[in-house]
Image 1 (spheres, rainbow, N blue to C red):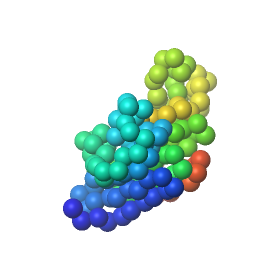
Image 2: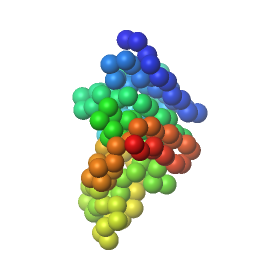
Image 3: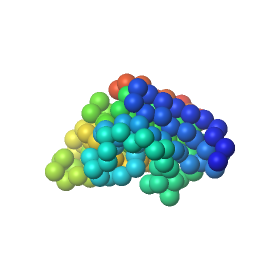
Image 4: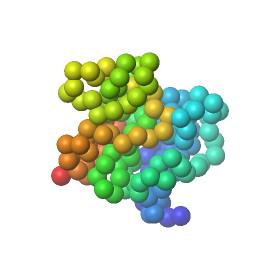
Length: 151
């Protein structure tokens, strides 16, 4: 598979293939690799590069960004997907029910919003960008933040 982009942080590496698949390896803490909702059951270090299957089954990725403990994926349709640690809000999601409800939703600006989810083990689309009709063209990630450039 031809690789068209790469990304890395302190503890992981990602590759983006020409056909829109993401391959990664490294530290699986906090679900950063996006391979399974049961990320805590993965070995802490995933040495074998593998396709991020939950993402590949849903979207063709055109850009990637690797943050401190989170990952961002830009779909060909302009939607942004994120996974990993979200304690600083860097995943772009807010809980739409109390944490015991376990639901992630598009609660931006709603009074019932309860803050960011602590961890997402599989990539989830950032719904409020989609609901607002925003098309993102580039993504970037840092230690505890994320950024997107809109059209």
